[in-house]
Length: 385
Image 1 (tube, rainbow, N blue to C red):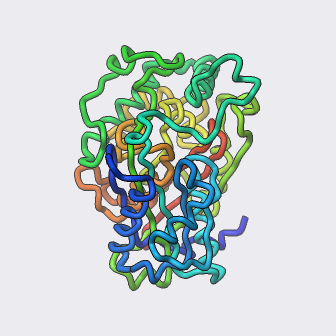
Image 2: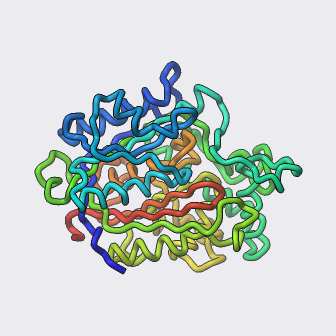
């Protein structure tokens, strides 16, 4: 496989905003606010931006790149607002890196904003139940993830207690993150006794419903050296999709992350043991266990015992979802952007109490649909070039 994208582009701006609740703001307002913050810390303005990538929820989503460019007064050479669900933005980083490398643009802005909590107060998904499922009245998308969790439990003996440890670990990280939406103490018993939503997943096995926005700025590796922030380089990335509807998933206990992760690491020239911090799309607790397995951090079927041991919690052997993840920090409908921002901020050493000492390589992984689209990005500092 060619590694021609390795360190071709770097992140020079990364920002989050309105995490939790942002009453009175539209999704566009939130995305614009995050975008200006990311540009400001990069030492750039809208006049520097010549490519726009991103997504917004609702009716404006099909043309969101055009809309945000208009609002911000940007006249881009290149726009892309294609969507793969919550993994979308980890695809945009690859598109941006390719566009920069091939000279189609110089400065790429990647954005997301959502007022999901303020506007609806419930999870809004772009994907709906397949007609053959509809008669059974599934709760979408949680019933699809509950089906995968049930299969994983059947095949590997994974327990509800082990799922609960994922939520508890995420909450412990969130308690060290002043921006996290939920920071109250959480125990395994709290998770197990919380309201059942779709067996075996209780309400505490499910992601938050919040407002929130994030933005990234990417430039060429060469140009990044002249900008204010410590550059974080895109070392590798890959995408894989094996199905869209859960009824077509080839193996309910394994995701296409097994493919995307291996190819991303090959491009980056790294292995699992090289990665210092891991940011996973944890829409539900089963996601974290399955992705840890499929990305190669533990053997298939051993994810439950691994998280139960405390390995992914603060002080554990593998820092996972250090911002608190979608379970405790923020989840405004599409969480992928937040895996990237946290990875970047960890590699820049900006995370305060939750900072992973000496972090040089990070893995960010996005999930879209119902365990459908899997996209992995590997990021690194100048020290690993």
